Image (tube, rainbow, N blue to C red):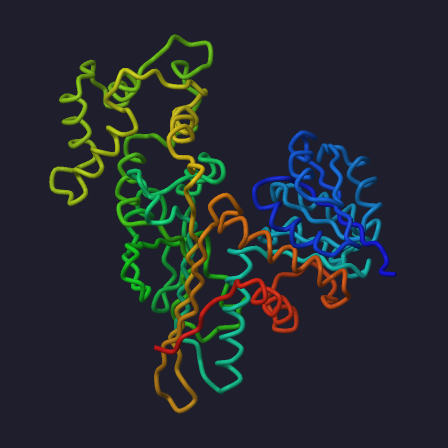
Length: 459
């Protein structure tokens, strides 16, 4: 008889279900789903026999420790700022941890005892803390490392590494001015647009932020001309010369994919101030009702909130007169209701007030599906000095009535990592990410059995 394995899942968001589905295929796996609101955990648990639901407050260290102590592996799908607390409890009770998040400095501190006063560490406790094992980060690492190691083993050099990833509505469901729909927080998506991107291009470090990030977007040549994709930098790509062991690379760019038109529309919204997090009295919950046309008029500094006056003021402020996307941008603002007498949902700041409208208008419908597109492009100098271009591409569609492509490509790799730890096949200790073939190959093998993998081509 196979011994029972106990798994604690912290978080019950949309990527959790494919992870749980993968794990409960083995009857010996018993999953406890813990969420701040027990109703959310119960809703997920109902779909999967062998699971139980419980409530859990991540700020209650004793409660977290009590849950961690009862389980063999802890899956932390809660916001990344809480992972360090989970790792600390897991080290104390010598339990393994899996997350889909980037390794933060706070998490990395628990890798080994780097300070004399810090007795506890993942390595000392002999536990595996596996991170960055979703889609991006996750599947992207698996296939990047695979090709890079192959190139190096064959005596070649990687001169350029360019990688773009995006979760989008399928083309037939991209029916709004953004070409985008929300499967998670609209606020999180918009705030990510305020991040600074850093990357290496032809030997120089490039840094872009603010409206410059949207201006930096370029049309992508993916080899799939049916998709009108553009891409722009995401976060800081410069550490990947070390993370991927490619000191010879002259270009390293990791970025985000959107449909063409998204960036021009967002840039106009940024110029108008729609990403402002500042609390303003007119957006307070107890303030008087205000319409979208009144909001836009106030932003533009005009008392005339007619459609004609607002349109003219927007064209001037956003410098749209000779912009090829002018009509599309103005149509989008009309679709959002900016020229209407529709009352806004007041949420304190302009950003949150705007997000309330986006979340009303930009959810996936019941019969709609998403897609995930991830592509690496490798420019290689072979051992004999000749040049070669390779690509690795993942294209995954969501299932109508089933899991989304994003949930599947984040949740399944996470579930696979958990199972490999339980089976004693993923044994490296410390705070880890999938950066070596020893860790990655068993994960890729099981992923491909699930029909998930990147298609590799030499161009």
